[in-house]
Every structure is written in structure tokens, then in C-alpha cells.
Length: 398
Image (cartoon, rainbow, N blue to C red):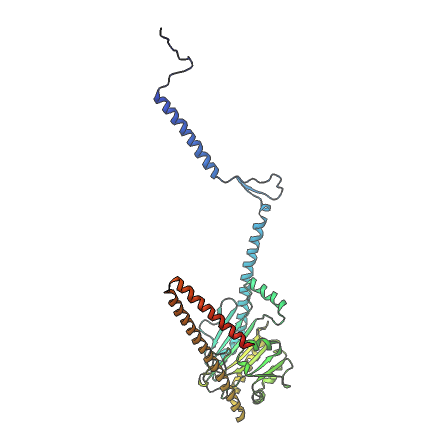
């Protein structure tokens, strides 16, 4: 007897094709949900502002601006604006100072030189250095007028200079003017170095000027007590300071209006920095150099500048004693000999260093060709040899 099996009523027979379609739909739905979850995860989280905010608030459509939440950014922007304004103010300030001094002295330059300035007039190198080049005058081959001002455009440099003045009592950053007269050949018949320097600037002048190492510093009763004379020999000082006609450099320097601005006046046949090789007598340039502090009123230094031109003209009338000329010549020969000896010593040291380097290179190449065992033996022998040499040097010192 056969038994018949019946399917429950709630079970429905499903074709294979329908089952596949249903499975594919479920998988596709899962993939869609996963991709939506992925892109939602990539989105930035919404900005949540605290509800207890009670400061200023600006709204425009869906934009909300609350200044109190951007204090740090505000301070940064404010600091940047202050720095930019400080920079532009410093640039304008320095440019104004340089132009005012140039305009105050240009009429006098025009009377003295056939070419009182270059085509560009006042030339700037950055925002704190300015130059004027003048030429075309008797006894003067050229004149470089250099204005070196404080870096007012750079807030950090100004702060550094201010703080350094608290550490170094001899450090006083100032606006400076230098007039460098290059004398024409034959204007100054003698070779010497001489200067009048304000006592407050003696340390900096001695540090920056190699040529003044030829001189000795003394006081002169004819000069104001704030000034010192730097001279090789007394005969040079006497000839320079003595009046020529109605002109006297002593009377010029006694003017109380000049004292706050005067730093130094020098005559030199030597370079300002130590030369690497001796300079032959026929190649030496002779200069008269005037250093000033930049005055607040540019017209205050016009009289001093004009006096230096007359001072240059009077140098042609110097007449030193024969024994002074001999001493000056001897001093230069000794200096040239010393420079030459130091140059030769440096050359010998360089040759020895080069020989030692070549010897080390040859040794390294020779050892590199050996086997590992032979290299070790060679290095051990060299180490022992160096130890014996070191012990021998210690024994000699004892």
C-alpha cells in the first residue's frame, strides 16, 4: 500500500528563476545600503555650536558668523596687519630721511661737481641703504655718499637691536652717513694714516678699520675734549691741524652744532680691511673719509661737509719733515713684509695639508686592494705606529 505525502498548505512551490531574481534583488539592496553608508561616513560632521552662546552673531540665510568663537584667528590677523603697517611705515620713514638729507646737500654738490649725481639720483639698496655717486672735481676722483639707516622696515631686527643695547653697553645702533672721498692721483704727496675720532666711537672705529692700526691714539689740547687724534707721528698731526689761510679744521670741529653728529674724519693710504697680499705703493688709493650721525635737521651738516672739501684741497700743501717720510716708508715696508710672511706661511701650510691628503688617499687605495686579513694587519700596524709616536711626543714634553 503506497503512502501519499501532501505539502502543507502554507508552502508554495517557487520556480527556480523567481528564486534567483529575489536573491539578486536582496544582494543589490545590500550593496546600495553599504555604498550609502560609505559616502555618509566621508562627509564632515556637522558643526555644532553651543546653544548657550550669547555674543554677537551675524546670520545670512543658512550662514552663521559668531566672532567670539574666532578669537585666536582674530589675534593672528591683527598681528599680521600690525607687521605689514610697521613695514610700510619703516620703508616710508627711511626713504624720507634719505631724500631729505640728499635734497639738503644736493645744491652744494651741484656747485662742487660737474656730475653731482648719477642718472638715477639717490640709489637705494634695499630699504635701509642709500647711495649717491659724484664725480668731476679737482683733487677728487669720486665721492661716494652712503647713508646706512636703521632697519625700520623689519620689526624683528628693530627688536633685536633694542634688546642687544641692554646687553652690550657699547652697542648703539644709529643712522649713519659716510662720505668717502677718493683722491685724485698726486693730490696727497705723502703716504700716512691719520684721523680725528669722537671718543664715544673709538672702540667701534678701531674694530672696523684695519688701516687705523698704524696709528697711536692721543689727546690734543687744541681740539674739543670729546675728540681724540689717531696719528702715526706728531709731525703729521701738526701739519694737518695748522691753519691754512683763513681755514682751520680745528675751528670747524669746535662748532657746537657739529659735535652731536661728528663721528670721525680720517685720511688714509691703506685699505680699511686687512689685505691678503701686500699692496704696492703705486696701487694704493688715498681716501678722506667723513663719518657722521644722520641729523634730524639735514641742513645742520651742510657746513661741515663743505669744510671737508676745503680740507681736501689743503692736503696738497702738506710738507712733512724728511725723517717723518723715512719713518712712514719704513712702517709700510715692515707691514708689507709681515703680510708677505703670513701669506707664505699659509701657503706652506696648505701645501703640507695637500701632501698629507694625497698620502692618505694613496694609503687608502693601497689598503683597499688588500684582502680582508691583510687590511686588518695593516690597520693594526698603523695604529701601533701612531701610539708609539704619541708616546714619544709625551716623553719629549716631560
